[in-house]
Image (cartoon, rainbow, N blue to C red; front, side, top):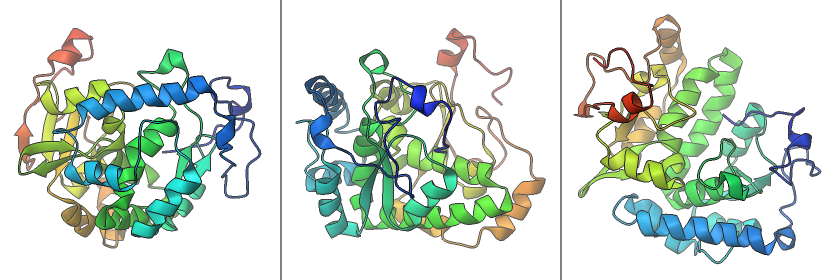
Length: 301
């Protein structure tokens, strides 16, 4: 989740917005003219790299929405202009933020159809991997699918559910749903598996790994299973969950989570690599990537 780091941010030279004046809702002024030529060039290179990889790998809804929103590789987008186009389609807007924001503010934005997007772009030294979401991850990876009406409704519902999860002290369960779908989800298509998660969509290496490598498990989506499953934050995923379509994802999540949370309190976590009884296994991973890095689990059964 997008937690604040109030002490470290102002001293963080990687993010020039870290000391920007924040509004009460943690938004900032994007200040589009302030981006340097080097920063716009960084966007262009990141965009061009992914634009070559995603046809035939990204879901059609993403590719079509990217075209409708006229998201291009010309340079870092103007959030205000992008919001006008997005709002006309689904009522969502893009809200510039300096970086990670508190969970309650993040959920409030989503619940009101505002997507908080980091305004800074990653430094050159971190072109291939960045822990904190930047403008390329957030705008290129997340924003296009907000033009899809069903996906847009799902993310709004997620924001409303997040506020309830905070009150119950079960945010970690809901965070797993976000991670395994919004960030790293796969979707069925007539042509095979496709990407819809933004964490994959904005990463060239994981674009290939998530679909084509034999290492990870790929398992059919089950809400309770997903919310019990741990994940990796510093490497490729050991398990990817596959939804059938956005309508079924919305239907599965559009419910009162209170009974589910009660069951989850008593249920043990499932490790990131593990397969369990009842899984709809699409591919069982051989974990060769993780073994080569010394990260293979003791058992993958």
